Length: 352
Image 1 (cartoon, rainbow, N blue to C red):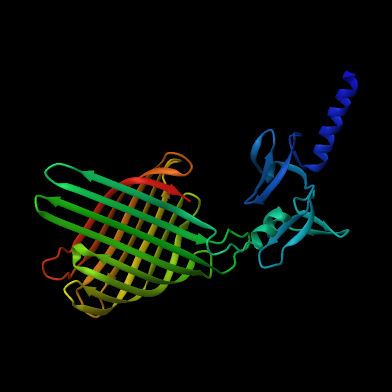
Image 2: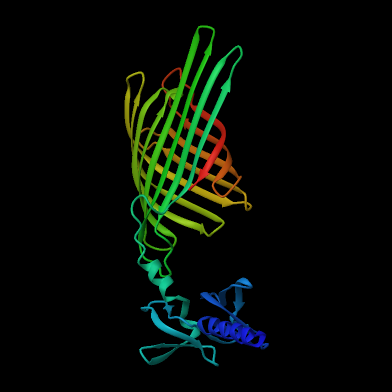
């Protein structure tokens, strides 16, 4: 009985091995698993026992994939079929009974064919593929003065899933912030409302470079501003873009229309310079910073800038504690109003 059971287990293991991708190392070790990618001189394999492995190709003697793969070559259509590593270090791909050899130096990336099809065919709907954070804060003071302050923030970005071969595509950036404050002492009441929302649409025509158009609406009662409309566009460059850090610079032109509580209107043309930084400092802490600077071209010497900084500490996969600083500066507010409107807030954040 034991002998039959051992034979059965052996057959099961042999069958599983036959369906797996097999790597033989130059030292004679043999590893089985599922191919993730071959990229940058490493063969990435997912093993049920050993987990995720990154094996340098210099240590690989033989490799064969059990399922069809897609071999991506720069400037050419992908080649799909069954994959095997030749003794020379080049790749042999077999499809429909025909084999061809592809020089390893020409290969950009190799991945399972079904993974490639999923990435290339990805077409998320407008409400899908969003990533970002939403924050909520509230403070209450009771004593000689009764104060209630409510803050909300939303920062999101939508971009199609990363494809193995770059294709020009759109990227949407959205930001929203409100600060509602009400203070009362004796018979005096002060209400302060700030609202700003913006949409920036990027068209990436290369990995790092993009054209953009933006629209922004602002309401800042502490500056006497009833409504500001900003419409513009220009050119941007992603200086850093990886899993831990993103840093972009942009520049262009904008048209600005402002209406103040006093009843005055202004219209002007402005230059635009900005930057956006996102940094995953540790596994749980993150820093996000945005700055847009608008020198007035119609009235020289006047300018404004909007900047926000958010520091977040992750409590779980979705929830975090946030601390933020927002500065809205206008060099020429109506008489009796402050130039600077600075807000410090804390609250709970949600990652989506």
